[in-house]
Image (cartoon, rainbow, N blue to C red):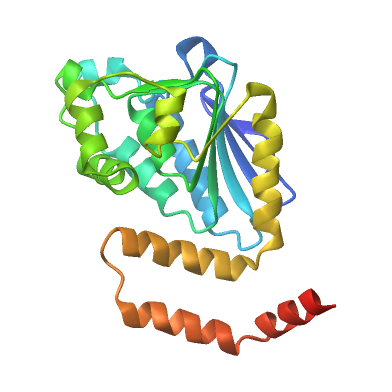
Length: 247
């Protein structure tokens, strides 16, 4: 995958097994426009089908805002379909580990974009809010499901029903952020997570991610969990890895 862009809204690249999506509409707070969605979904589909991919990283441009989410002008015009929701569902279902490197504040639908990712790294000074109720938007079901799953019902109600703004320490406290770092440390910490993923067995990481998400969504039968566990015990990979650790 080479550097590409769609309607100047994002760029994507692939380097040493890491696919990076960078939102680039910096003057509009890295918002996502309808013209971006086909390209974003194509990028995710390509990454999902690449068995050599180690991780997928989503980040923004600049230091002020990670993303303000889906363009509000489309909502006002009544032109909203399910493309944005489908894009986020496909990101959530991406088989390899995903990192959201929040280079700044995050608003609206971009908060759901972040919740689709396995690891969320934020920088000091970041803020977030979900303004759906303030503009009269009843949020789509999968977004609300992710809020409840990742943050718990009480915090989901707090954010959806009040539209309150949270600062970075509070985002970390409630679990919206996995870690909070200084802005200068964001790239290095992202790289450390990628190195950690690279050190693991990719098939095992993908299998456990799939089942952890299924457990969290209450749709994972225990026998399926047991089958994957037993298959890993019979794999020659585990014996070789254990042998290497003893050397």
